[in-house]
Length: 178
Image (cartoon, rainbow, N blue to C red; front, side):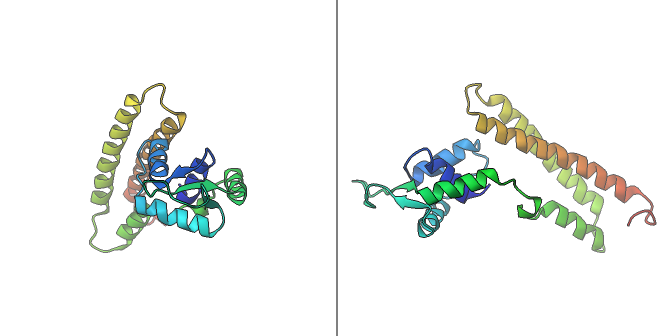
């Protein structure tokens, strides 16, 4: 998820302090994507530089030295564009597992089947943890948390199917493999 746009979405609800943004971001993602507070403030600085947020209350600090940030009109426009634009596969980071298996297949001496088995075990553990986490969500919990955990489960299930496919492809005689 774009931290930049996530913070803008949270600020669209009203002015917030950095620590509030961090807590609300993590709550919205069912704490599956923890944010470092330094990342929050670095992102806020860039958003402020780009005119997408401003310091609330005339840019001053409260009695505890905290600064509240508010979204600007330009920031709302940016957020609206982000929500309207589909996410492209090209915009997503490279998949390390795909790269690892591609390299394992082409690197002499690597036991590719062992790499796949290790990943399958790790993915199965993750799937079990996510399924348990889904069961512990309160029915009154925000839909956002449920959707995040559901997405992670679907990704883990898809990864298991892809690993099955990798094993099948690698089990074919070498002349059938491209």
